Amino acid sequence: MRTQGKWYKLDNAASIVPSAAHGADTRVMRLTCELTEEVDPSALQSALDLAIAGFPHLLCVLRKGLFWYYLDSRDIRPKAVLESLPALSPLYFEGRKNLLFRVVYYKRRINLEIFHVLTDGLGAFAFFKTLIRGYLSIKYGLKFQGIPEETASVAEKSADAFRHYYQKQKGLGQLKTMTAEKAYRLRGERDEIGRAHG
Image (cartoon, rainbow, N blue to C red; front, side, top):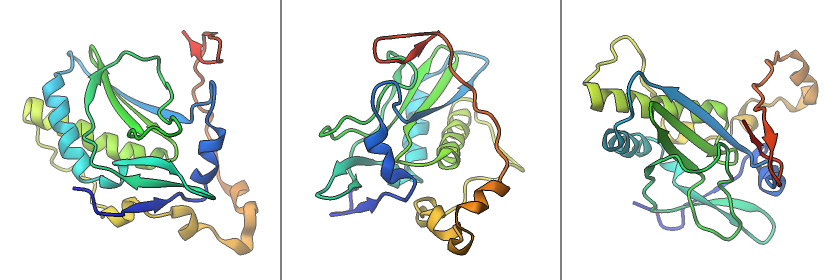
């Protein structure tokens, strides 16, 4: 249920995303799980219903205020649907009140696509892991002994980690101590707005 007037301020990293999301740069990330047999749509929907209960802060739409963007909680039930759009298609459309993530499936593959304003990669992975665990439990009756479940509270899942961990006295110099891996790049011909199709 929607808490009346529940809204979330965008964190520092997310605050620039809405204005930068246009054309080929949709600011959407995708996580994929490939199974050994075709996806059962009803089991996936049941798993999504269970998973979202632990991540209610994802049930938000992006709104534009007078001076800034913010996330407004909504009672919109997410649906797992057959994939019909190109990968990483836009999720945010100004003025439209739609969820900022989608769960889609195609043959043996389950995909989570999520707008970067809603969470970072770690948060998206925590939700996706919960979704896949739920799907495998519902579909096959699997028990996951020895594999820890997501135990963070809703407040911890929706906290601004940048504000908590950033050390002002070190400035951006602290980023130099971090290591980075190269990201996988989609290849293929580009369409009229610059999205790659392979």
